[in-house]
Image (cartoon, rainbow, N blue to C red):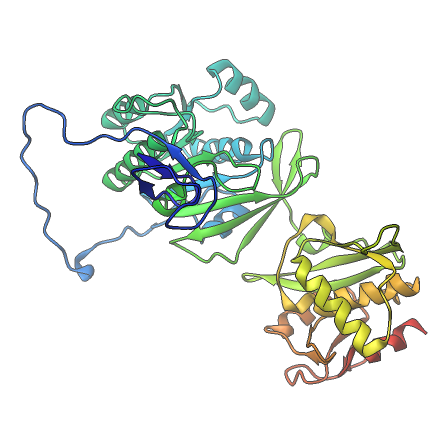
Length: 442
């Protein structure tokens, strides 16, 4: 059989293009098991449906990891029987985070099982000493056979199981090498069934491809309950944990971590991470975004240079580059500023990525500041969505953003004049069009 590594669909012959998802060169050959193994037939247990009102829940439905950033992303903690997939670039901190989670829970006198198919017990011990994560309740199982995990859970039910990584473990029922599509399908299915049967939460560490997706078919993401991704550059200390899928909570929450020599540390004040109050240079503007229930300020940086080639470059880091083309078109039409001979580079400081429209006004302010080489007035923050005709529109939950800006000490907060929730004061400046921003550069 041939399996698509993008969507998990199977076909009997190879094709250059997947007939289901349309991905090119994504079909990989793999063996498949047909029929059933010979042996004694087992009686089939029939399960009857139950009423939803009859299902009893424990008082503490979720298990707190004592890491508030992770608990917030998960929706309040670990749900019994959940299966979570943690992905990210190599060296970004996946194993570090889960080893710290295992230690936190083991410190609560809970039995934890850490399964490693890539490292030996001594290697994990060295890392645990560096991270100060040594606990007698943390058990190590260095094996690449999923049957060893099932055998351990038949004898004892731990509070959490960590698989590092899903591509390194395999089952004896399939002859393919670990990490192949057929092995991933079989191992993931076994682990999901095991978690639902025993109510033991299982965390899977998954490698990613060069495109940033979890290696293997999309079946892995479809089968699990929660998919977490680490974002950020490998050499950058700041790491962002985001939920791309969560059956037990919102996917809008993010977790911010600071990578240090002794592991990942939670960031107490997010707004202070993405901004530099002492830097009042041209091409910089402060905006405000909202991720889930959290509001924080972020810095937008703009850089211009003379174009040395035929077509000017348009580079955006932190948001869609197509939005940058829209911003430049809005400025050219409403402010008569020509960008045809200039390369434009826009970046969100700190490695944050967002699609929030509340950052539109700050991006345009940074572009104007960089183009005119004039710094914005100090302690200025911008909140607003910008339409195609240059009008400044109010954004959702602007009151929380203004409150955060006032808490941080900003003296000039620029918002839309159409925002009826916020009254104009000495600190709050309301504008209707982006042309009114030019008054700040005089």
